[in-house]
Image (tube, rainbow, N blue to C red; front, side):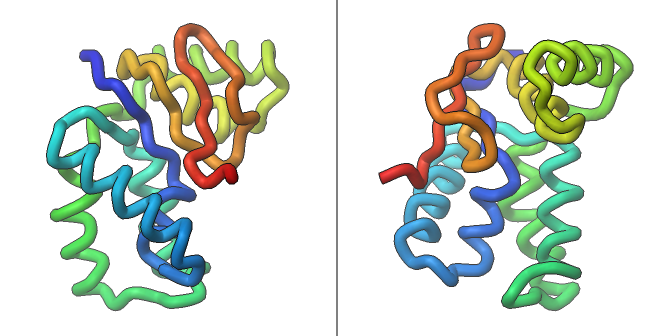
Length: 141
């Protein structure tokens, strides 16, 4: 499987909350372009974090029906990477080499497994390259 871009959870949070208009517009563009063009993906971890944030932590919480609609129309079309022993082993290797948190390492490992060139994330070092994946902060000015 090879997809160009992996989208981290924080992009979806900006799209959902819309508290920062500039970031929300960037997030909307990345996500919609990824869905329409088929060039983006996410892992089950991103789905879990996104739903958890929208239900428990978000400034603007979504109803159950709104979350179901978002799951079906936005997250589901992008979901390509499921948990596996290989994914966990790869994330442990990345965590050891780069000293990232385990969950950040799992995101990077998923992007690598998907064959992505770019990982869109605000949480990691912009421009860093890991095993063929370049981390890009789409909100950087």
